[in-house]
Amino acid sequence: MSPVKSFEVSPVVLWDTVRILLIKPSSLGDIVHTFPLVSAIKAQWPGVHLTWLVKRQWAELVKRAEGVDRVWPVDMTVRSWVREGAALRAEQFDLALDVQGLFRSGVLAWLSGAPTRVGFANGREGSPWFYTNRVQIQDPNVHAVDRYLSIMGALGVGPPKKPRFQFKLLDEDVATVRAICHRHGFAVDRPWIAMSIGARWPTKRWPLTAFAAVVDQLHESQLDPIVIIGSSDERRDTNQLRALTASPFIDLCGEIPLGCLPTLLSSASAMVTNDSGPMHIAAALGVPVVAMFGPTSAIRTGPYGDGHQVLNGRVPCSPCFSRVCRHVPELECLHLITPAHVVDALRPRLTAHAPCH
Image (cartoon, rainbow, N blue to C red; front, side, top):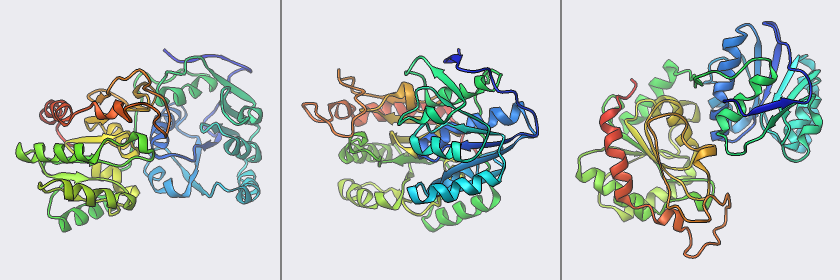
């Protein structure tokens, strides 16, 4: 059932020649959650021209989204607002969709000059003031994918019955991934397990000692290679992980370009992960995910779709949505998850999933 209950004005009437500005600058997981909205718009109106405004650091991922006609990278600084606004206005957009719901994104929607601007009525930082049409969300416990798809109601149609994440897996990305993996001595054509040990919030990070125990158990069961995925910032963590386990693993942190990450993860047999951006890419590609959740809500931002397992210590204060843990003992929601829980959740998913190639 759609979470949309009402609109402050009548739904927008669209036609195939409309020029749409989609504003979703960040972050990695939220960008992945917006892919089904692009697919739904293009399925309903194949001829629309859709421009996606995104932070420069995530632009390469958006270029892999089917249905996006133009990627508009921005630096979200105050100084750039007027410059970007003038350039956007020159494009003569008919419609702006602000899926971010913050002051800066609302301002950019307004500066674009689009006569119709759609956003969420409960957007933060005063962003709804910049919209002509406001989508009401009554239930906060709705997944981000379904929240973003509720925009379709403002366009006069219902959300799709089955949301579609459509990635372009480019030939050049396949070649890049194969070359990098070859240097590390493994082939993506054979079964392998992805692992993401990082997270933006300290409170989202399952202990490295626990990850090390999972690596050991998987290696002992001959369920390897295990490949660590992440940015170069995670290198220090992988060095610590190497010191905590005698078992081998492959460290690709900082080596896979963001645009190539969907191609790499599409070949994984499964993924073990914190609540992280790569988790959402894997889930969107249909790769079975076993995820450890503590301060965040799997209902709102968990791996989307079937075949995934979210593990949580189930303490009364979780989800707290806090980057600082004030619970005693600290991070109990994550520490109650054992390596055995993870491996037990992973085994049936390894046998049930046939990787994409």
